[in-house]
Image (tube, rainbow, N blue to C red; front, side, top):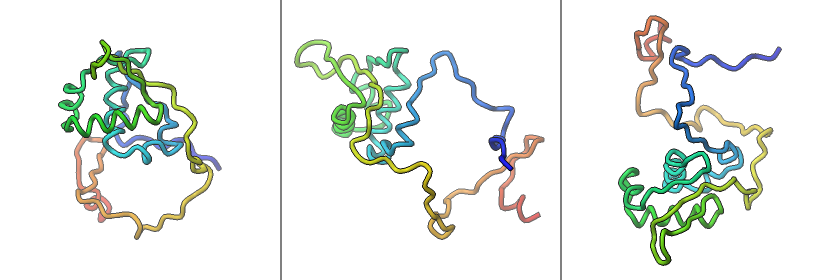
Length: 154
C-alpha cells in the first residue's frame, strides 16, 4: 500500500512562495552538486539565487556579498571562482577590469562526474548517524512545545 506524503509538524505554518521568491534547481541536490561545491560556494549560490531577478540576474557587489555571508573577500572570491569554473554562474563586469558587475545564475549543466543513482539505497545504521547537540523539539496541536524525549517517554 502506498502512503501519501508525510504531514509537516506545523501544517498551519506551511510556507508559500512570496512575491520575491528565488529558486534553485533540485538537481543541485539530486546530482551531488552541493556536496561537490562545499559550504561556502553553496552559500554564495543561495545568496545569488535569493538576490536574482526572474532572469537569474543579480547586481550584488562583492563586498556586500561578503558582508551578507560573514565571509572574507578571499573566501568569497574563491567561492565565486568555483561557481564560475563549474558553469553554475557567469559574470560580466560593469567596466573592463572591474571586479563587480552583473552575476547570472545559469541552468545547471550535466555534472562532470557520475551522479549517484537516486534509486539505490545506502544502508545507514543508526550508529552511523551522529547524535544531535541540541534537543529535538516536537510541537503539539495546542501550540505548546516540549522536548521530544519527554513526549516519547510518556
